[in-house]
Length: 244
Image (cartoon, rainbow, N blue to C red; front, side):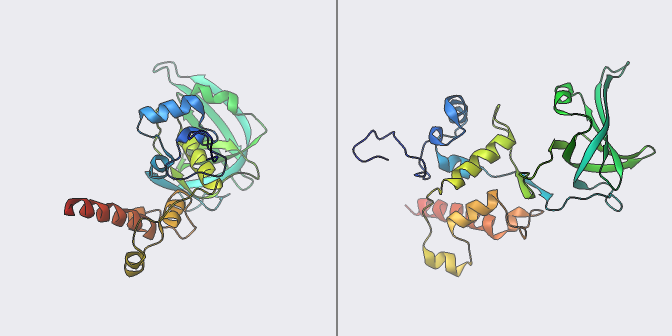
């Protein structure tokens, strides 16, 4: 905040938990209004909006042997692409044949014709979805995809519930923007309790919930030190409130 200036003038890099979200790069007036209507007014509201699940994108696979029924992360080039609508049920289907270099699979999307302009024959994409095997070979239904490039995010990826028209990807980007600006997160627990219960500090816990390290227990996140810290924090202040 500029000294002597408007109390609503926030300089870049001066984010804290009570900075209005409209000052976060990428939010803008329209998104700020949507977020506020849904109860997200300040930076803290978004940082305490936790993923409902995580996806393991630490390793790209080329071959699917032994992975039937599992979600996989892979990269491949689309060698054929077509879209059609079934005669009886009028279901729109987009089907792409993808070559990973080690094997081929069909990526199929149902009733999502709006995806077609984003798919191009001859281009390479990254795909994430559940791999299946049927009489026609390997298949992935309704996978997530994006053009494959060096800036692609890998690792353990958080997945958020959509907030109205704000997609999980946009939510992830906004949270990343907050941390890129070195948001100030003040500790709110006594240090002797943090040490006694072997808990991470508040800022570290929040960061690693949204950007998990490779050893993060994403299959049972609530048992992780990061979430244990948040749960302890909530219970601590709940009991403190009851005491008064």
